[in-house]
Length: 335
Image (cartoon, one colour):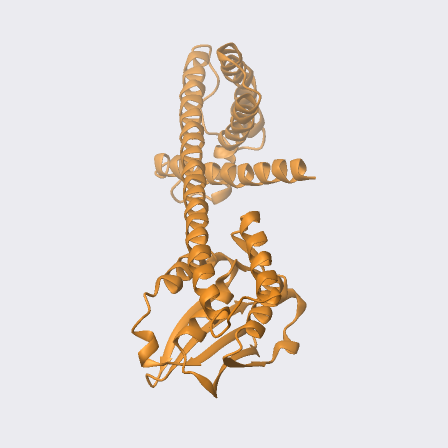
């Protein structure tokens, strides 16, 4: 199945590249012959360029077949000879027999010395076509390598950021869950074991549903803060299947707990909102000035960098400070 998809994608891209080459070739031919066809119907010019475009398609297909199956120089030589000699009779029949039969004449009556002139035109056309195909081939190869290199760099950066976030999160999370306890209980140990299993799996991204389940376990462990969850039951299943950077939601909870005010008068609120074109998760907490002065901001910076790679997944992240008293995290999943 994967092989079929791979070949389908390959042919799909080649199809549009061939059309682009034909359009460029058509434009060049029009510019070179604009004066000859000025004031004449468009179909006359289309009849004139039809063999050129057909010739281009044949060369394009054969070129990529030879490249794909690694045919050596002998194959190229045979192909060029066949294209030149084989096209001679077709081009001659088209311009000197078929078109004159329907009263469309581009050249004077055929003479014996026209053979070398026609071969020269065919050779020049073949050279230009192969040059155009070669530029297309090497340009798209360069482009593909560039895209894959950037993708690899982004993947390596995401893995590095995810590893840094893991260390930052575990250290801070241990401080939160162990706060006010004489000894770490079994529930905390079980939670950290689950987190460790996630880190061993080296998953940069996980399903939102999985991340949310860990968030709820984390809320239960932070006994010195009150949490309010709103709108969770309204979230459709397809949103739960969307992927997010691992530990990102939990980092926001850890940040909210660390920098919010103590006590239960100002709870940390997690709100799911269903809008026309998106589903939004908002995490809102009060800001304690005494706590925020201790912060480094490393956790949020790492999360931001991980979400930069999610922009193509129709996910948008934004932060806001309200009246210098509340910190909001808003994560939007667009339909």
